[in-house]
Length: 276
Image (cartoon, rainbow, N blue to C red; front, side, top):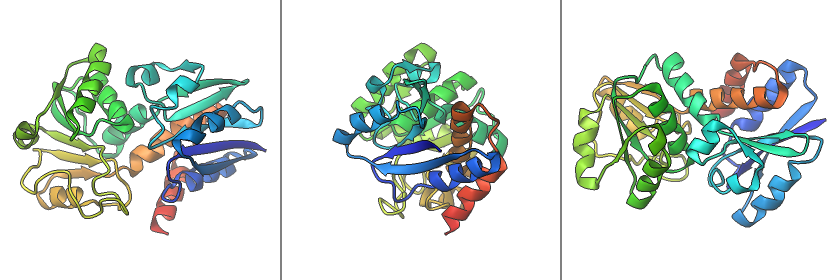
């Protein structure tokens, strides 16, 4: 039986095993997916084990998306651009790094959210691995203006420098944040503010700071964060992170198996696991 893994800092909250194992069953694939909780010091050994012939590869999540990059042999364009990897594929012992978060985010936004960000003004909160993927996807989609805010400004500047070849990212100061959010059409939160068990109930923005059209929060646990509740109450379109999770997972599954992913099966399994 083939194996695939999730390399995570904490594996207690993830929906990925339920989602991928349901997909393997639907495809008739003799494969099993398991989540591994790893400290930073354990990451190199865990990545080395992915070279085993019985291993398809792995997903990578917080806090390892950037740290895993130098441990790999090759990178896809999206992984090189973002400097972040969320999917590793074992090709005969050589490890390829991919970033399926970017494609997953944009597919979720357009297909599930019914929103095309082309020509729009967007504000992005956060500067970690997920933020890099979202920023890359937004720049490639042709947004008119993209601004990023992070509590640690140097991390925001690092993101802007990394993605400079793909378009301009303006780094916002705390004094600029509220006004720019209000003038934006779309706000995307990639921070952990609002996440169950971390900062649940909190919001990354003041109550009166909302964009004009839509709020996307890539958190899926809880299904509706305080930020999304406020946006929905104000009549804005909202989207949580579950569609992005499903679509990035579908991209990863196809990379591992070469088969079209059973997206409906994966979504149903993720929703059931979330409800449980």
